[in-house]
Amino acid sequence: MQDAAPKPLHLIVACTENRVIGRGGRLPWHIAEDTAFFHTATAGQTVVLGRVCYETWPQVRSDGRHPVVISRNSALALPGVHVTPTFPSALAIADTLPGKIMICGGERIYTEALASGRPIRLHLTLIHTEITGDTFMPEWRHLSWREHSRRESADANYRYTFVELSLS
Ligand SMILES: NC(=O)c1ccc[n+]([C@@H]2O[C@H](COP(=O)([O-])OP(=O)(O)OC[C@H]3O[C@@H](n4cnc5c(N)ncnc54)[C@H](OP(=O)(O)O)[C@@H]3O)[C@@H](O)[C@H]2O)c1
Image 1 (cartoon, rainbow, N blue to C red):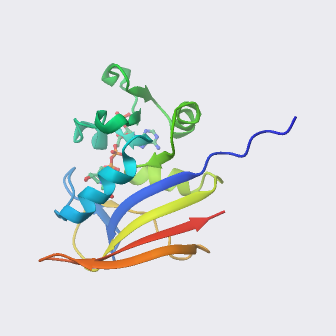
Image 2 (image 1 turned 60 degrees about the horizontal axis):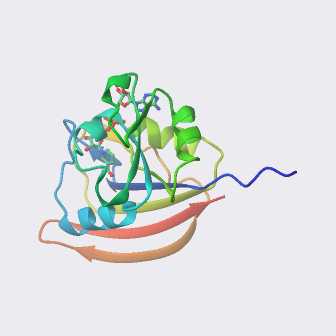
């Protein structure tokens, strides 16, 4: 019997032109439209995230999400929250859970996901600015992406583009 095709990994990330995703354990911006997009895209799905992201998202279990947290600290587990120490073990758990596998960061998790050999879908909000930060999206622009959608938008502070790309 043939093995089933691996589930794609849906990376969801907002980053600036200089690839900043975070500063001091938080997002360095507040873009309400992007926050709403993130919540809608992850609702009802399996979300894979690092310990820092988990600690800053107390409502992760709402809206039917299935969280898989990567941490050496298994004491973080709560009902409905899986905690596991490595990215491969997180994927093994995520493969058994309902919905899409949404990779929500941070930095090491995006890096391991891009190197995983799985089909990748990138839901990127590219914020058209350069800022200082301490956490980065790994470089993605040199890879051979297929573009599925693109939408420009802006708020009072930033111009940004929602783009959906795939890599197989
Ligand atoms: N803009 C965006 O779309 C976006 C998305 C995500 C995050 N962020 C920002 O990025 C920052 C948080 O990301 P971060 O990279 O600093 O932290 P993180 O990935 O959320 O958490 C780091 C911790 O998670 C565990 N971990 C993560 N990846 C691992 C791996 N591959 N293997 C083993 N353990 C792993 C380790 O936990 P233990 O030490 O407990 O073992 C590590 O210390 C915040 O500023 C956040 O706001 C932004």
